[in-house]
Image 1 (cartoon, rainbow, N blue to C red):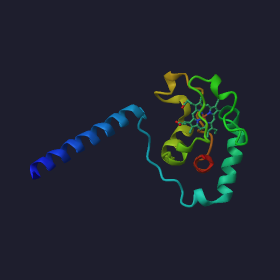
Image 2 (image 1 turned 45 degrees about the vertical axis):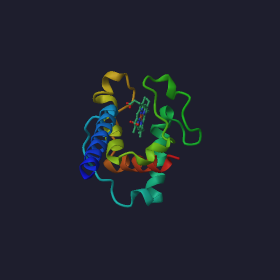
Image 3 (image 1 turned 90 degrees about the vertical axis):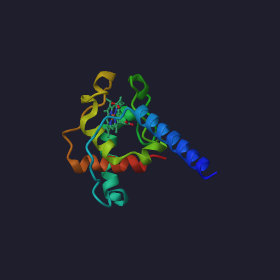
Length: 140
Ligand code: HEC
């Protein structure tokens, strides 16, 4: 009886592990540097407002104005520009968003995918964090 249960647990563990592995591989997310968002950024209205302004100036033309959701232009791109009002952006790793804004299409797999996402190396780290904080709070 006890051995049965142990075998059952082991089978369950294997299933969970396989699912996690498959899920992990399916993501095809390349390695990116780990970074910490400066503390309090997500709760600081001034930082979020700065992120909002940066987004309206530099990003909304492709990703969509905060007022309209997804830009009509987003779908002309292949791959399309994502809509940052999508809920899952709330849970996105801030370090991933930071890195995507910093390097844009200049790294694989985005480089050969035909992405038009610019690299924003001209922005300061603080400005990129302001954008990340804004994107994470903007998601519905
Ligand atoms: C010329 C159009 C264009 C502009 C301007 C632009 N983007 Fe993008 N962006 C894209 C496209 C297209 C993609 C999807 C392809 C990719 O991931 O590279 C993308 C992808 C992204 C991603 C990855 C999202 C994900 O789910 O993996 C982030 C983050 C991002 N953009 C943030 C920004 C920010 C912040 C700005 C402004 C500073 C900006 N983008 C400006 C076109 C643009």
